[in-house]
Length: 329
Ligand code: ACO
Image (cartoon, rainbow, N blue to C red; front, side):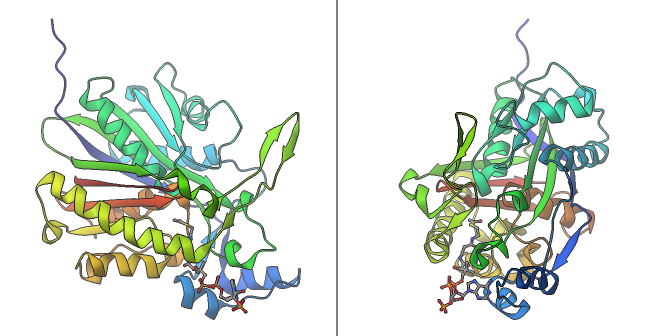
């Protein structure tokens, strides 16, 4: 008998988790001042819109945050972990060089046997992972996927570089994506341009039992800003065209939460009123691959985003990578 291949995939549950330690800008500024690094709440808010971020403590790992978010998504989808047949974790801050954080998450969830792997596309990671899971479901390779974005960026920050260490936070978000007869994911699109590797990177690596290079985040902020705004506009236009929709059909825009000025100028260029823009960067900072699923889950749980709404997710990050997923919730 020929197996029935589903035509669509659909999000059936969302979840997220933030580590309890919350640092306001003033708290972070006081901490940096102890090392002679000067910053202020006003500079951070004016340039980025960020007011606070969460940081992990002790030996809490990326997989710990991922598992908490995953459990909440499974609960929301009314789904037993044992029924999951695919786990993808988007992260740039894995627990280990290998195995993948997805395998560690699988173990912590107490399920075994299904494929589990990580996706490394930095802040576009969740959009890449969701696109992959959608493709695998639509080819019949999986029926119920756990797609997670999880990061402990506080571990790769240079707290002597005030231009970057104030921007990022830790957290995790997850969705359950299931085979469906009705459309959920409407269209997807992914891109990368390796010519821009150097403008946003963590250039260190492990070799011969040592860390070579500098294992902390380096960024050319103005260069990132310029590329991000352009690619976010272009990819939104093309994913909408693929689905045969226009800006006017979008109920909610969830761009990667990098910086309020990038978010607002993206919404403006797409002619979307700011009321349709989901903003969590003020409370979370930039949580890289976790930022989109975190923002999605918070908006679903607060009742802002409702079943049936059309949502445009957009990622952009190191690589340079970018992409979009247009979906009906
Ligand atoms: N506190 C106080 N002063 C600061 C700080 C700080 N935390 N950081 C930098 N400054 C100073 C600089 O030293 C500089 O001082 P100077 O003029 O005396 O030399 C001044 O502020 C301006 O520095 P710029 O780097 O030019 O500041 P800019 O206006 O470009 O803002 C920012 C920096 C916020 C990073 C901006 O470039 C930006 O938003 N870039 C987008 C990048 C981004 O959001 N990255 C997130 C990760 S990438 C991603 O997720 C896709």
